[in-house]
Length: 282
Image 1 (cartoon, helix red, strand yellow):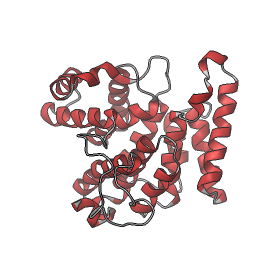
Image 2 (spheres, helix red, strand yellow):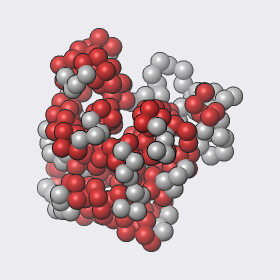
Image 3 (cartoon, rainbow, N blue to C red):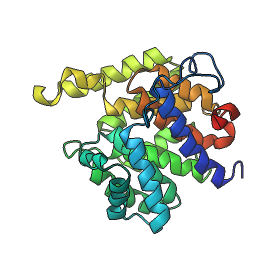
């Protein structure tokens, strides 16, 4: 066993945490130069300012899963209500990338059984996901990658093809984005080229929709692109957590969620061992 399961679990949780902080600009100078969070000043000292609502929802999911030993969505909501009741207003509002972040603990808990994992993920995502966003593939894609890494069955060279097979489709927006990421990785495409290509593909998808369903602003915050970028940033340098997360932040595309998902993927694959010690101790 390359890394212990405990260290991989810790890598997922801390990796997504670090991604959240960096993606939110919570520490000055870290992304460009520094290897350490020490001696840096937070941009804002307000409580929880570095965490998205979806990260806080995921934290409550972790507590509920540990307490109940299973996915109990009522207990999950009660955990949220006791911690921060205003988060309950986000039910049925999440994009697929936000739902993917909120359901990361479910991927950890049910990683051994892909069939049960799918069932539990869809149940959990249904609580939060926007009813108009019927695409569950983004949630499933992130969770599958984490589950494969935890079982030491993640091969970076075949991850996307394996994910597309698991999704059972190549025609949905996220499937098209992931297929393009595979092509770009094979071509050695840089970050800017990748972002341009993913936006081009998504604009073609939106062009086929009625105008009221494809506002121009949505392209710059497309949740499918966030998930595709998380795969790209991880698979570009799968053995280097720091480079993965820094690259995700530099996309400037929903950087908090993109970097958090990238950190979770890299943390699952490399475990907490590959997260710089100074980042772990900060």
